[in-house]
Image (cartoon, rainbow, N blue to C red; front, side, top):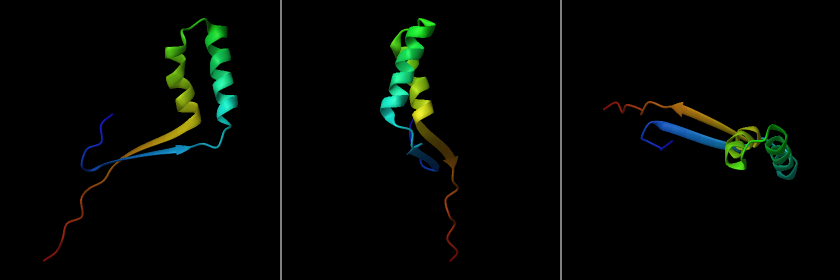
Length: 62
């Protein structure tokens, strides 16, 4: 995802302890027998809130 004019990307921490979320992601990788690179995006989606919005530029009135 690349920032463009008119695109607002906001990333915020959800407030979960990162050690707990990371441990849960590691346990998920071992439990499901999936390589860790596939689990990392899932863990990040749990730990972070990503909001993408399109904004229109304001028109100036002359």
